[in-house]
Length: 126
Image 1 (spheres, one colour):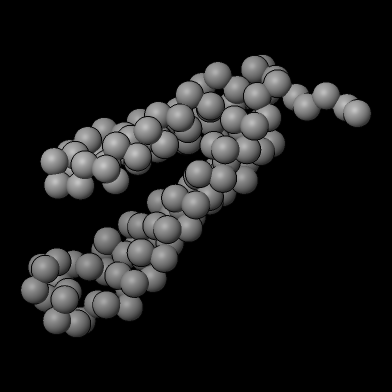
Image 2: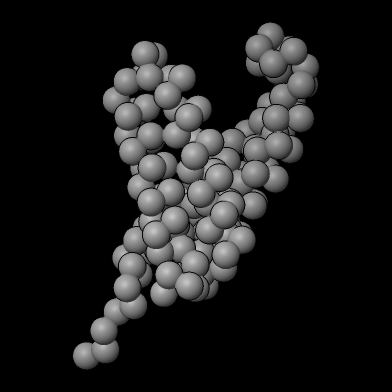
């Protein structure tokens, strides 16, 4: 039986988390683009929900592509994943008092992605 490459489990975890996060962002984008010109748009988003929809669509697509590229140990994908993980961890801290359990889970997942990609994410680490 062939030995698995060092850190392959962590890389799989990080890649899958990026793909899942990107897919959720894309689904949010489709909802936002479909909700434009509705009562929700005019009441809560100051008639700018379409811009948020496009933003989430672009970010989601980048995360999905980076997630798949992480499996190939692409350096740029590791950098994108580390940046997304750091930003996600910091932003979820702001929700800590409103949604404490969900925020702690998301901060933990983001930190684990940053760990996986910073230790095992590049070809040099392999």
